[in-house]
Length: 351
Image (cartoon, rainbow, N blue to C red; front, side, top):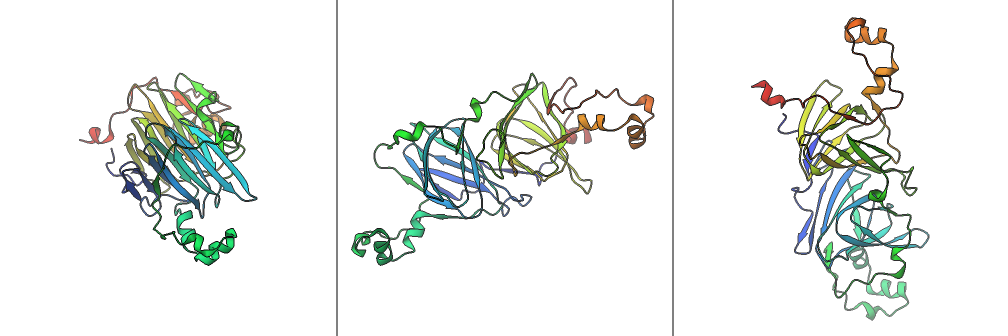
């Protein structure tokens, strides 16, 4: 097994971009995870009573999955579009590039959020820094107030995660349906079998999306994600639960195989063939983000049905009579069963 893979990095143990007793922010970007292209990943942890300061992304849309806790998201977009909604564990939210938003932990325990951005070089502005950049007179003119009204502003550096004073005020409208909110775990899985399931947060089901999407992919101990590739889509996955193994082929013929554990992330460039399987009977759960709102793939199983046996015989250098009896597959199943034993560790077999 490859011990250090260019396709894998740890999000949980990455050097924090911010950390205090109120929470932490870690991220994987092109600077820290060089294989990334057009995507990045963040983990935001908010302790009880903590607030992620109001801010906006400069150069990317964002989608996020709440893996733990309950948060309130308030957002202001173009056209004075105000929005405030509660996001529970297993739900997702979407923020357009440039829209100002905040995240507030309104539960009794810790909240954890895994967010994907549509850039490998994420940049943002905070409300604090932006207001501090203006003089008291300019601020007074803006709000129709005397400049002295802002004399108490000490112009502190942005803290990123702040402590809330008192109870969290939740607007009466926070529970109403909202285009920025998607209950992915409330979805009946469009793909489901004894081998696993996939819940799909993509434009087909979530109209707000434009250039990002996410699958919650579960592969059971008796299943496997068939070898496949995404013709025009990169894949940025986060291991939520369980242990798994992936194999990836690069255009230069390099074959990379590696194991994955909770808290790790992986990146597959567009059109690279790869496969995934669980390494334990408990299975594995991934949050897989894509750089398109409607990702597509081509699987090995359907590929065998796309060509005649004569073509396959010539391609593999195997007599037609000796070819396997490939099942006719007009639609790829995405997840297949695993009747054969797991392959041994490649390093173990090399000793």
